[in-house]
Amino acid sequence: MAASFRIVTLGDSVPWGQGLLEAEKYDAMVRDTLASNFPGGVSLERLAHSGAVIGASSTQGNFADGEVPVARPTIIEQCDGFANSPETVDLVLMNGGINDVGVATILNPLALFPSLASRVHSACHDAMLTLLRKVSAKFTKPSCKILVTDYYLILSDLSDPLGIAGYLGMHGIAVPSFIAEAEFQDIVVDRCEEFFADSTAQLQQAVNGANDPRISLAPSGFTAANAVFVAGTPLLFGLDALLRPEDPVADRRHAQCEITFNQPLQFPQREQCFRASAGHPNPAGAVQYKNQILAALP
Image 1 (cartoon, rainbow, N blue to C red):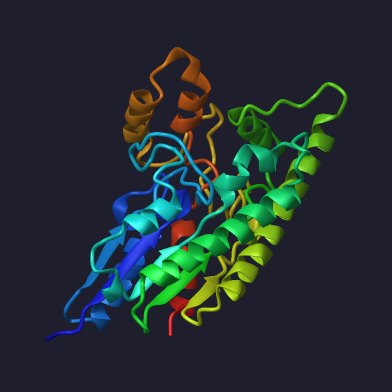
Image 2: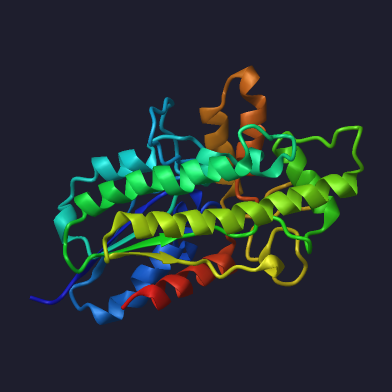
């Protein structure tokens, strides 16, 4: 019988491939790259979706289209609910933690209590360790590789200030009257740097704590030059001058956002959903993730 290979993807909007066409998503590119090595074929089952939290504590909410940011199914629910012969899976691609912290929390210098560091530790270490133990127990094939991908700098000191202002507005964050806009944006960038560094460190500690040699961390490899609103080398989708999304599935997502957030008081969620691709890997960013994952495979 010809050898085959199975991939399962768990996580949030990054492994889902927010804003990307199917062929552009990094797990699809990993599958296609590996296909030549397995005459029996390489299959991919993607459970990741936009907005997913790890869900180590009770989480409420309804399910939606994968492009629409909603918390459920949580990543733990994705893992627990997978029943298609998990013992035969060869590669699990996964991430998690940023939605448990909250992107708006990362971006908002006034979100001081609890501290960003404590939020990151709770999500990217404590909750991730709980998730990793479940993944380890679910996918039992001795040769199965479990790769945890980390995040990246959303905004950096190379990001255009006008773009930063629009991005903060998209997340409902206004510059208070008692601080200059440039100073406020500097603090926002500092918080993005803090999240990137701390989340990577906490994810690595969670991987170590899981005590399963099959689990490893695959770093994204993104730099400050790859953040949103950086000229020349961005690996992330931004917004245009009219604050419109840049991705190719924006129109389809728009329709799904209107279905999911259809109540008058859900106007902020609906508008943010329309622009949900901003801050997520663009096609070049997905290629970067694909390359990092392939480099981490034996």
